[in-house]
Length: 307
Picture 1: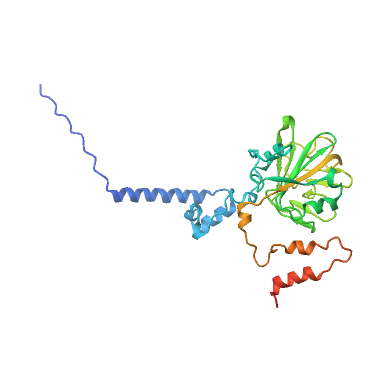
Picture 2 (picture 1 turned 180 degrees about the vertical axis):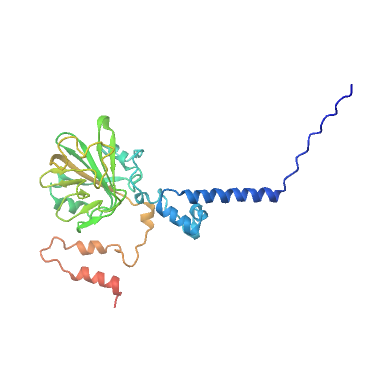
């Protein structure tokens, strides 16, 4: 019997390195094209991708410009709802509890101090603004007569100039069962997040949370400007109906005792308030006939220089 000869195993033909690189390049281009066509779900990102290409979006410093990162500018993003901030060594008393809600805010890693306490400084909008205006971002904590602990985060701070401030990172919060904080984020965009009016107490949105210090009461209605999904109810408070007045036991506001690194190195432009200008304008706020030349003088210099 004749033995069958073994069929030799063909030796694979080596693929030229240039061919491999070309194939990888085509695959990468195809991946970027699919990503571009599918979209990211974010309008701005998709628009930049279509105009400048996927490489520009992937580049951490496109065209030499450094991207805005959450770590450096946390208040440019909506509130973080799922994670808690770590307690600092400097936190004492209720700050050890309140610190948890400050995740992804400019106050997260800063030492905080008590700026306003209604029981100590007075239950009035005048006292409130005299203590917090011009001190930057603040976290308010209050308690109802029924024992509910709640509050709100104001990333822009108060000035009492009648502004309706935009702030996508603003939020409300309330402590539910077992001391668990539930955060209520801004919805419908950043508009009208904070109502900052002279002669009135702190307010988040037209109806999210409104505190009347003189009457020691608060009202809340969720859904229009602040979300109600997390609480599954139309008010920040368990007690009472939406928009109904709730009696308060205490109101306090904490602000930072130090600046962030970015704030320390920030230089205002010519049209922004320079160091000491705002304080100089407001030094005569309590006078019966405050001079207006200081305000218009500074505005004139900003617009027309020293001429």
